[in-house]
Length: 247
Image (cartoon, rainbow, N blue to C red; front, side):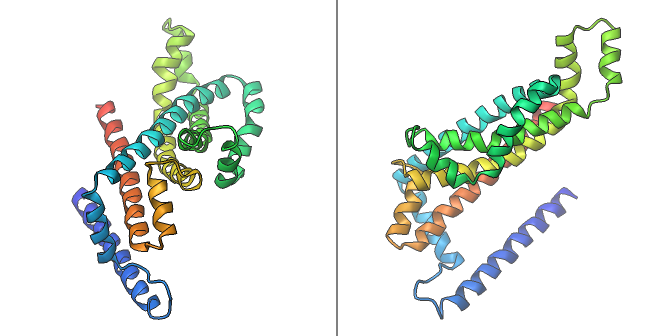
């Protein structure tokens, strides 16, 4: 079944590549600026992979976005636990989390840029966008725990801290996993958007901005392909790490 699923995913990807090819080929007949075809994008992507500056930019962006994601995962877990433990704290934090969810990412980037250096901004924005996702999932996961299990643990002499660490948190783990898997994609989108706007030197966002200014759309598509691949890779690595942890 797993092999069948992989084959179906590959076929689905090939289908959309074919749609891209046909759509671009038709559009290029009427547009002044040519839309790169899939094979042209792949050719440019392979050429970029041979450039050291490209990989330095990728490494810089990966470091910033990963740092932001991990910070949000840690703070969101603590915040979710605190919200579940205190209704007063949940009500106090609710307006802030709602604000983060509703304000557009671009607005947050421009506002934060007034006070935060451009080299730090991608990490900050990634963390800010992921924080409410992890927070809400952890809070909901703890709220769904059957209270009979913690009560039974207390009967057997566990302290409050032991009940939290050995009963509540393991039962909350699936919700945390879902929040992190959802958040990792958001982290990439928000982090790259921050890089494109604030344009820190030696980053994926700077490469995208430079290619756009030069009207090099093959390069824009190729760099975007790297962003997609990195997002998929991080999501897969997170799933793999979670499976290994559960064994």
